[in-house]
Length: 107
Image (tube, rainbow, N blue to C red; front, side, top):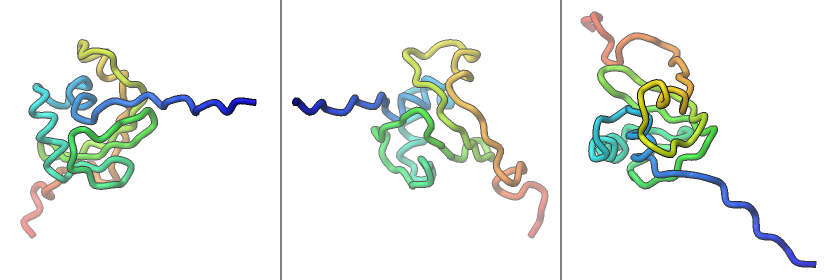
């Protein structure tokens, strides 16, 4: 009886996912987000743009004064229109929905 190899789990590069999902205007901007060291993938700090992303993973990163937390629902095959990109993920709200820097709080 032959032992079958496990089926490969589909995945794609983190920077490609961020670009296809329209969180970055260019692929190099997506690479910069991934390599900055502020992005977390399933709670782990990521500093590599080539880190694999799979369906079901949770991605968290700051952008534009806010923290985006999202769950990957599907892997894209192209960089389509915004409506198609929004179907790739589900936004999860952070516990505090205010700005990252505290907003108007002077303290």
